[in-house]
Image 1: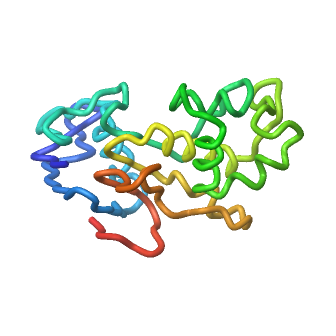
Image 2: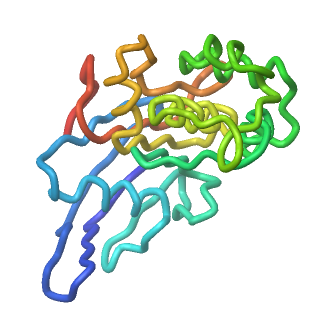
Length: 199
C-alpha cells in the first residue's frame, strides 16, 4: 500500500494533511502515533475510502480504496451494534458463516466467553430493544466482524481503546486474518503494545 503526496483539508486553506508519503509492505503492521488533532483519523478514513484526498494518490494493491470496504476494513473507537440476534450482527460481515466460524472469530478477539454466558448465547438479541453491550464488548464485536470480513487491509483507529481499559483481559492486539496468512497490511493509530513500525 502506498500513499503519494496525499493532502487533505476540511476547510479550504486549513490543511489537515500535507504531502504525506507512506509505503507499507505486505504482511507489515504499522502504528501511526501522534497528538490529538494531528490527522491520524483523517488519514485512516482516506485509506479506507471514506474520503477522497484533495491531492495525491492512495494505492492498495494496484487499486484505489472505495467506501464499500472491499479493500480496506476500518474499525474505529465509535462502533455500532446492529439490532437483532448477535449471530446476525456477525453475519453482516460474512453472510454464509457457520456457527463454528462465528465462534472462532469471537474467540480470537477474546469475546467467546461472555457471548456464551449470554442468556441465549449467539441467539441473544442485542442492540436497540435487546441486551445492551458495554463499550468494550461492542468493540470486540466489531473486531470479530472485521475478522469474518477478512479484508486485504486492516485499519484500527483506536479500535481497542475501550477493550484495553476494561480490565477484563480483552485482547488489545491488532487482529490477524481469520485464516493462515492474515491481512496483507495492518495499520493502527493510537497507543500500541508492543510497538510495530511507527510513523
